Image 1 (spheres, rainbow, N blue to C red):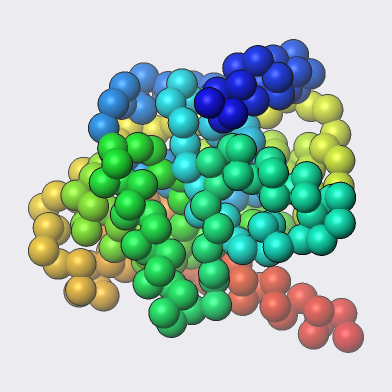
Image 2: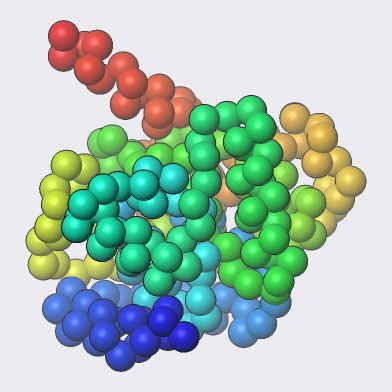
Length: 229
């Protein structure tokens, strides 16, 4: 209920009138049933504008840091994340990664839409980076279609490090669903998982027009401080 109120009665109307977001391909999102929305990740506000564009609720896997902040700011962020259907996950790897996978599968088993950023983190320079194969595992284990999505200009409205977004138009481009059912039962084959993930990233690149770099975004972000030093 709170998600509905925020999207349709409170935050939604204000954001739509202020930023005047546009969207194409909405007909590619099914009216019911589970599916994965696999999107590029340019800004923290991606998780606000994508759900606003889609009629159905979209649940995202969000890093646990958003739910553990202290003080008034931490409370507001935690409340907003919970209200918008964000699900806290631990990104430290190992057992935490498996737990994140199971959290995503629970959403799909309920028949809901799951939003995923295959890059794993925000792009540090506006380019599209190599996808993590967790999205492929969810597709095969959940037996669901994946819908490629491109967020447009969110990094210009709120780049990394900025606290308040600049007012400008935001776009959402939704592609046709991709069906990987031909690979059912092969969720343990790492070559299949990589192939599926790469195909998804190619589809996202076509929608977004971004230059693709075959490296992980996290690798580039970790290397940046070292170069600066």
